[in-house]
Image (cartoon, rainbow, N blue to C red; front, side, top):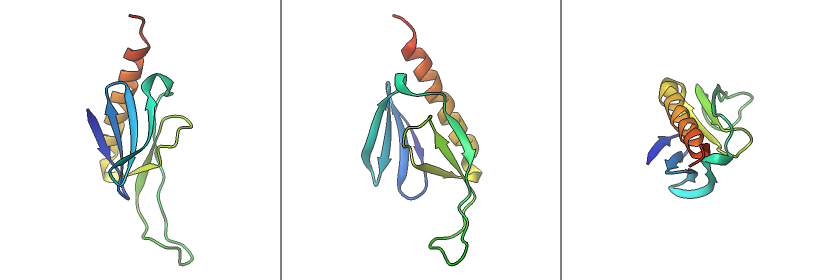
Length: 99
């Protein structure tokens, strides 16, 4: 099992051949890795403008195609996010191989 902690009590967990999307410690969504497209880590800063709630954050967004991961990781942990994505991509490739 491999876990990537994000901001706002969110996380992604690679558990065998399943990618779990966690929110507040509970599984919000779960996807077989064979259904995922290659993951990406994209810069997605959160800015405080015009009195919006929250503080400005430098962060990256972890995505696997159109699935709803809704997870952001602080920019200083981008390498950790990229390593997690590489592990998920490898698990997906292995799961797609014929037995």
